[in-house]
Length: 102
Image (cartoon, rainbow, N blue to C red; front, side):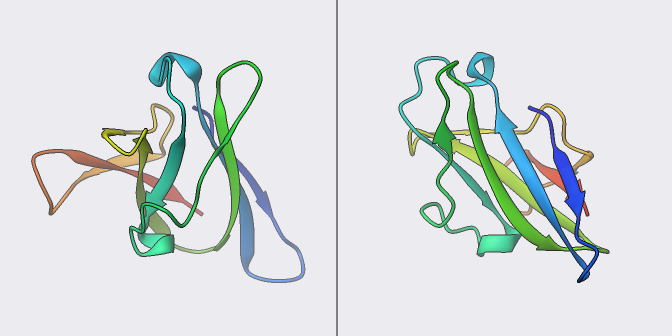
C-alpha cells in the first residue's frame, strides 16, 4: 500500500493515489477508500481492482493538512494502510485510523 502524492502547481491541492495490495485483501471483490475527505461515506470512493489483485484510486485533496482514512473491504472488513504517514486512535471503536499528510 504505497501512497503517491503529486502536488499541483496551479492550486494548493495534491493528487494522492492510494493502493491496497492483494496481500491485504486476498480474494476481495471490492474495496472502498473511506475517510475525512468523503465524510466517511463507505460508497463515495470505490477503488478499481487491478489485474494483479491490488486496488487503487486517486483523489484530489487540499494540501497543508492531514486526513484520517481506512479501507473497507467487501463492505465488511476494515483495513489500515500499511504505508500510511502515521496512525491515530479512532474515536469510534477500538482501532487506529491511517493518516495521510498532504
